[in-house]
Length: 416
Image (cartoon, rainbow, N blue to C red; front, side, top):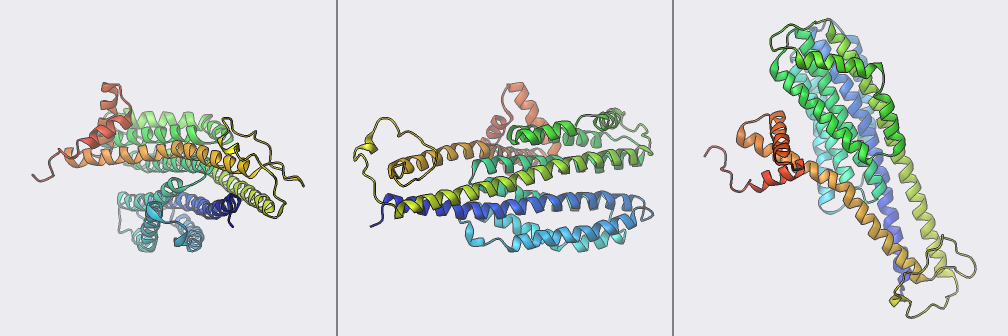
């Protein structure tokens, strides 16, 4: 006859299976972070090659492409190790859809590179294409974070996703600023876009600080201090405050690009630490679950121990003891069952907290899209509009987003 202990063992083995899949997912996230960084560097070099009409940085770009192909192969190999049967339902559908889209983008990457080599595209076209590919890869990380079943791992995934998103905004800022300095003239539209990218970085880093571990937060704080940050802020002020149409110094384009690149390399170091923390946390969770399963299975072989038949109805929960099963079996089966239930309940609450950040981002992006469609606004303008509404009404940005989405049904369709 199967007892509660048998089902407790089964539950523990389900947890082990989930952790094994989660470990592979976090491995995919780590290699995705490396691939995104590699593509960001390729994007920067592609811009420099195209801006110089192929006169500069051609050899550096060719070398970078060769290195990136290696990272891409590692990413594809990791994807092949995923078993589509491991995740069912909505989370699995979203994650695998994101993977399918990212694979489609990577399949088209060589054609994009050929356009760059042939100088057939402008820097803006090449940037936009690689921004789309990076966004597809970041969406994989987003869904991996949304799918995580362990609260500590989920928090680290949220922190990593937000930090990677901040670094992508930093990469777009690098490209925009280099182009603006390169042309030697300030433009109001680019200034607004630059301010939007800076603000977007700050928002992502704020969420990162709320979810990252203390050591990673300290590493990032240290990275942002010093002469590099001060110098970059001065260049930002030049770009953002120079009157429209006024001249800029073209020689500052390389200075700006180098400063932004060094900052992104520092961000990559923080990403690496987060990825390492993810791997070690997954390994620790898996080993712990395996030890617990072995200990519970040992109870099945041990002599039965009399327990209080009314213990289930006790007003106070049994005293929690550290795991340890001697010859007399220190804890009753009821103790184990109650501890498992309490742990699962706690995990559910912590997961809700971690996923709230991801859900808020989804709602805000949907609200921005609605404003862009019905008011003919750019993404930066839509976000600025929502921020202004939040300040005027003394409400949170997520509250404004929910109000905007609530109006979706009464807004007229475009073209009417």
